[in-house]
Length: 293
Length: 164
Image 1 (tube, chains in turn cyan, blue):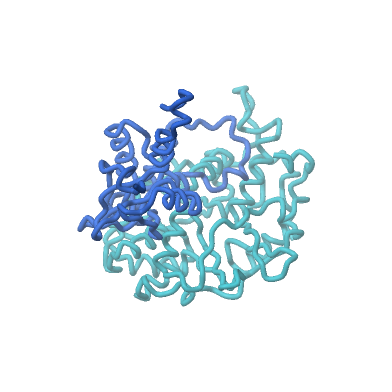
Image 2 (cartoon, each protein chain N blue to C red):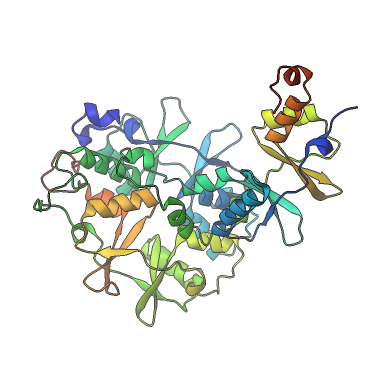
């Protein structure tokens, strides 16, 4: 990848070099059902809504779809009823620091990129994109953990426990989807741990909930009926670089983190946490850090 | 006499239910390929009553399996692809054929002319078209059926020994 060859500081990178082109969008009259289909197929957390002139008018996220499920909105209704408007945008020339700031101020996970042509959204940049860049930089480094061959090079690698969210919320497997959705929106989480008899049994994410909506499951169904198991977890002492690599490769948004015994879940590491930590995979590397404004 | 869909369509085709989970659908692709002794790129999707409701292709499944941020990651020399499908399928357990299938269907009747089929296939960038008669699917025309039919019927190609 040429970008990293010419620039040795990630903090010099601009939005245009890190954004993804928008591949999928919906129209204002697209149904919620069709929207879910696009979101699932393209594995996006949100989808851009265009009007008849192909101008972006808003965005529908998994959170908005989940709220529609919670409120009992019929799935055939148009997605524009649940769309968020206006769009929060940035310019191709903005720095990554500015984008990270916009995201944290507005408490959003992605910013659309508006080109010089007014009213057209050409790209999107989200936390995983930024994490991907950080780790690509690390991969290039001669000291990279992923290139390390010698066993006695212990290195000062950053560990999961340093950037994870060090607390964990859970629901019981018999609780209803209705309850699960309330907890998720109250906590602003993308997924929650499900326990059965105090032991981790699975995970329910927003994706599982919007699939339940599409499959016509009543919101009184139990968490158990839609949860995914086993829980994807790793030790708090694992090297961050390895975990991030797996998350990016497998499109996993979060790992649950245990201490000692795998049943002892003590935290969560999401791609958003990793992006917000704004750091590379080892302490030796200052250039990869994006400066906090 | 004009050649129509009836002359080129395949009557032996496989369907998959819209309620089938994706991992099972992938195995259905494998089974269909084994039975038909050729690679199967797309299958018709039917509801519980057996009516055609959509189409699902390998493309739809690959879109789902593709790591979304892989272009950002960039460096893949140390990534092993063995086990890629099973790992992806493991995560697609709760996704059904009905969630991924294309519902904007283009269909033809047994009387649709061959050249019109060529026109539809190329203009719409599709590789197979279900053939519908009296509301029921009776066959499927693959782009290969059309291509090889035209080749076999060409006297010049036969004369030059290019016929398969």
